[in-house]
Picture 1 (cartoon, helix red, strand yellow):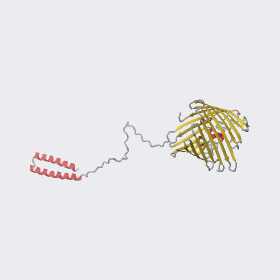
Picture 2: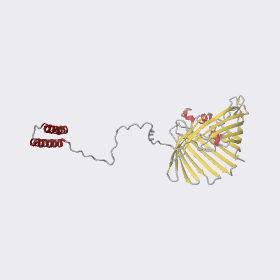
Picture 3: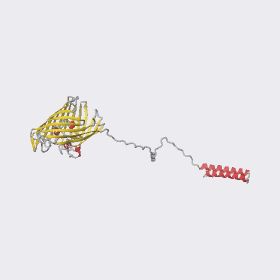
Picture 4: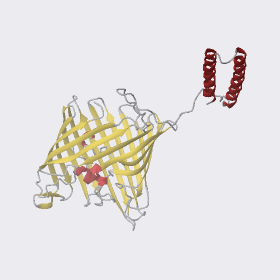
Length: 426
């Protein structure tokens, strides 16, 4: 405001001076006096203007100015939008997938009315086409943490879980489900926790991994299928690996008593031609009581002469002590040979003797024998067929013939099995 007033005063002074000189009404001395007075007045007004100005504000410049919380402006039209950075996600690493579909046709020459092959796992259906199993496996190798899950459908899984205390619910579709941890202890300690198949026997649940299509009597009756618990494995020597098992028991995810079953395994592999596996397991297996232990000793010897000739020998001995006294025993031995002249064909005979001395496993006290001859053809990559003849004998009438139950001491079958599989690697 003061600046405007000073400007107006100067303008008025100029106009007044010019007008007075033109009209000749004022002398030059008077004019000079007036100009001096106006200059003094102007100087006084300028001092007032300076006095009213605010003092200058100091500005500090920071080398790293703080971030503001202002909302960012949208990008210009046509500019690519920024992709938000992904949050870190835990990953188990690569997962390997494999699977198998197993089916068969079985002809029973006894033609039993039940249309069932007795004493069999898992080719139980007679004179008909049947599905054994369909299975999918997902596995991540421990690095140091890993896991394995085997999911499956089919009659084989119903048989495997037929004595599960938890019942034939969703558990029967899970053959295995366990986590693995490789601990940096000494030469490497491997810990498995969950449900896994048993360490016992020369055969396994999957037909693909066996030499014959049908399972031995010892696999079906002498040993368990699976366990739930903890398994610790450690290489004690370059030729010897040992493992310890702390388990609920035989074939039970849900425990049937408060006791635990203990297992030990030793695998000796002195060279690439021979290996010896010895397993021992003991614990209470009866419902609702921890009295009366079951003991099982299982031994498997494997001999590989060369890529074309291999042999297996399996021996089992088991005893189950009863709560009120007494005991039951069963034992067996089986021998296998695999003769493979080329990559697509193999000839596999198997002979076996099994003694269920007290009828604890088969329901009848009897001595059994079986002989099997299998011809294997790898027809295409991922497709295998096995054609098999088998004869079972008992020392008493046990097998059904037609409509007459337990009227025959023998059972003869022919079987054609077809297995489609894929694998994590070619």
